[in-house]
Every structure is written in C-alpha cells, then in structure tokens.
Length: 290
Image 1 (tube, rainbow, N blue to C red):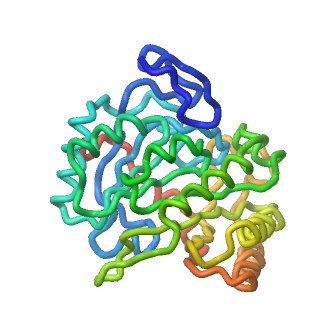
Image 2: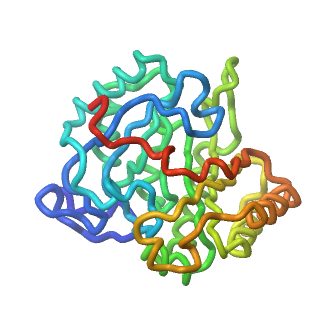
Image 3: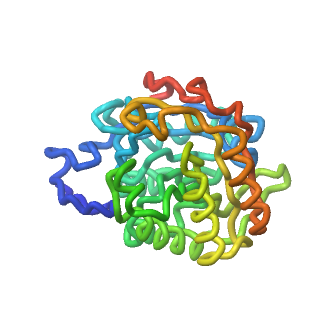
C-alpha cells in the first residue's frame, strides 16, 4: 500500500484502497493510440504513442480532459500490462511513447519500463505541478520532458487550478527537468530524441500574465536549453463558465501580444494557429488500445 506523496499536494492517500486528492487509486489507462496533435518533432508523420492516464494533481476549471482528469476513469492495468501497451504502440510505428498526465503513477510506470524499455523515446507529458524528488526517480527513464508552465501568479493558480503553490513547484520542477534533459537532440528524421519543450497556454483576459510567465522563464532559465510551445488552443469548457473573464475564446490580438513578447525575448519553438481552439482535438477516452 502506497501512502502517496508523489505530487506537491503530498496528500498521503493509502492507495489503492484510498483515492488521493488527485482522484487516483490503482494504475489505470484511458486510451493508448497514435496521437497527431502534439508539437511537430513529437507527432511527426506516424504520431506520438499517447498513453492517457486518469487523475491529475491540479483542478484546472478549464481542463479539456475533465472526463478523466478527476480520476476513477479508465481500465485498471498492471505494470506488466502497461509494458505490453508500450510494445503494441511501438509496433504501430509511433515516434515515441507519450505518457500523458502520468504523475500519480510514476512508481508503476517505472516498473513497466523496467519490464520493457521501448526503443523509441519516452515522453513525460505533465502539467508541470511536480515534486523534484519524484522527477529524480525518472532520471534515466524519460528522454523528453513536455511540461506546462501555466502561471506565475499564486492568485490565478489558486483560482483556476486550486494550487497557489503552482508557480514555485513548476519552477523547481523545470529546473530538474533541464538538469536531466536540457539541450534538445534530434534524429536523422528530425524527430526529437531528447530534450525539453515547455508549453504555455494563453488564457483570455490574461495576456499580461502570459507575458510575465515568458519573462520569468527567460530570467530563470534563459531561452537556449529548451523549446517554447505557445498555445492558442484555449476552449471554454466545463468549469470555465463560472469565471466570466475566461468564459470565451482567446482573441487574435491577445495571442499576438504574447507571441510578440516571446519573439522579443528570443524564444525558439512553436506558435499555434488560433484555429486550434476547438474541442475536436480532445480524443475520445474510450479505452482504445487498452
């Protein structure tokens, strides 16, 4: 029985008999299939082998994966069965194994990777709300870190994600990720084999917060050891309706102001088209591939 302290909440839930604050109990998977909506050096032409896990340490009111992020969804699997999922995805020709929202299951994921280590890179796709001690367990197992960096304001992170300590946790987590995998490397096919891509989702009515995020990243970490993915895909869903200021789509002007700041600061990476703001990019969590 695990008294869970994997994420910054350190709730101590006696899993699997008791669910954590994140909603996780036992190891579960909601979907495992090629995914084509990640950044170009992750998706490529064959797709990223995305393994979606339920439960998330954050409580983002605008989460597009709300049907699974509160926990309890998905099919229970063993670490051995998870390793077999990795094998099946790899056999389909995916460019990597992409672990989506894996934080509550790190110890089981490590067991699965000890059973079978894919020949393709392993991607750790996270909200950025991580404990350094948990990330240190992953050193040598993860090839590419794909974290969010959502906020620098404790007030906003409390209001929208129920985590006022998000900024400090995300900073410490990114520092550890860069220690492990700072500096991007690519294969002959242009696909990323090692590195860090930092995602930031621009929220409506909060372009100044986004600019502050970029300035903080530049000040703390520079702009050379990782890529930036500046996202325009915000879609008002679920709890966003309770917050008038974010209960709308992002405007082109808001996104342009933030993207201009990213260019001014010298970031390299990816800028999303506003047309990406659609719920059609959220997959069906129908146990495909599980």
